[in-house]
Length: 512
Image (cartoon, rainbow, N blue to C red):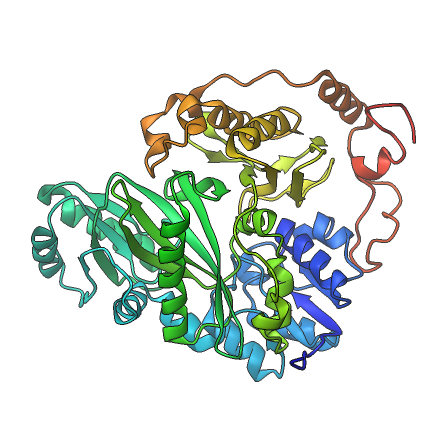
């Protein structure tokens, strides 16, 4: 057996549901997690469940979760041996990875060099070409000359995608349908890219349309091995950000899965990739796929891959960082997808008002349970949802023997979910899952653009038990001013909330 380094204590440099999810995996591997929090997150769910918690600054992320120096000081002060970045924040920041290694700690993610290379869409595309991976026709040599980019756009042919080279999550991205609008959209993209990433370099790509967004999950070890864990369909998006993800894709058969997986593995090996990552592709109607980018981190949607393969991806991140060989970790495992899994991102936002983000106190949280249902949650009744961070509250994942059953299970689970006190997208998600086109698997990246009524639809009826909970919340006030929560870190100042006020109360069956 390959020697594996065990980590006694690990800093989780993130917040919310991903911090809780990583902490759970670390405990299963007998590592002690240490979480960090900003002052506005003193009573956040990830802090209340932690054995060790360190305050790293004020509410704005730039003063806390993005402060490399404070994260490293928290790791040093608590005796951590490794750092897990989660996703978002500094998870794809090669300077953070380098700083972690320079401090004598292990970064539970890819090495800085491949992270830096793949973080540039231009260099990533060049690496994909060198690895023989199909790419979208385009232009990557932006020298700041807008007129040159206009000429290249004409050569490629409209419509073209204008994309931030250093970006992700749809920021800086524009679609120019004709010559007359190109320069204005290019300027807007540059401004957004500069503000978001500090880099206004842009690239152009032919718009492959209609198309699906299909990605391949990979993991690489420190022995040169890279394994593909199959695909995820991520075509249901709003503003280039994913809403629902599933595995396997409704249109990817075993042969196509093999070809896409081989392409992803070839690219990862070309750059010496280690750890978990995702290679993203566009898939056209003829079954041709084209490289988009690489996300050098764990993805929000990783649970659907875990559900259909039975592999814990966070476990693999930790173990391969400790030197384990994938051939030993996965010996005898059949990684072909079993059944079907779908994930819905539950966010504090109002789809009916243009997906306007929301903040405030969640008076009632009701999350479904049952066979084939998993909820990765970062909230609880009475918690405050701050304005400073991503709007993701929880992820609802279902698994079933087939896609139709998974759709029905997800629709029912969404119907059994409630997050009251601030606007959320739960009803919108249920409308999408119940839509006949979604049920038929007829998906493409403009699915929601073509069906705006799904965002405008009226809210559905809530279960009676939810209204009972709402009345209780109002009666109790959810003030959070009584005794500290048992088991909370002594230094975090967390008080009681509706969660603790209702200790022992059950909506079903009286008191426990």
